[in-house]
Amino acid sequence: MKKSVLFSMIIAIMATLSFSVNAQDKKEQKRQFNAEQMVQHRAEMMAQKLQLDDNTTAKFVTTYKEYLKELHNIYKQNAPKNGFRGRGADQQMRKTDAEVEQEIMNQFAMSRSIIDVREKYYKKFRAFLNPQQIQKIYSQEREHASNMKWEKGRRNADDMHGRKPGKDGMKKMCDGKKKEAKQD
Image: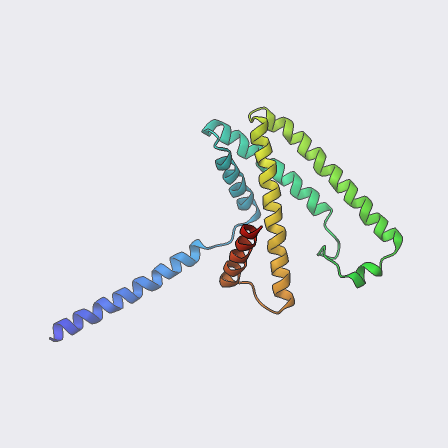
């Protein structure tokens, strides 16, 4: 009897220790990506969606990473000075006409820069991709931008209401977004 109780206690202790080690491993696996890793991951995912062979994938990933970095630099250079884009109506009303006009001119310049980069990389992509694959890249970019805009809006709404976005909130929001899309 004593042996079975002792044996049961040893098994319980070992199970508890293995559970906590397993939880730590999962926590380490959930680490954050840095910017370079995110660009790499995004390029690899795009290559998968395009169903490229190994040789083409290598060329594509290198070129696509350069493309994303150039776009990122354009956005970074043209980022608003106050750190956020969405201003309230009262802040917009306090701007002078010259400030508003300057913002509009900056937006034009940014748009031109983006078009220049897209044209430059269209020629590079065209060397190893067909036009339909390139169109798929652009449509995926629009979808990605839309998802990022939606996520930013969701986070801003949570911040305004004093809530912290979490897994459960994100799941509920995503489920709601899917339901809205099905109804349309």
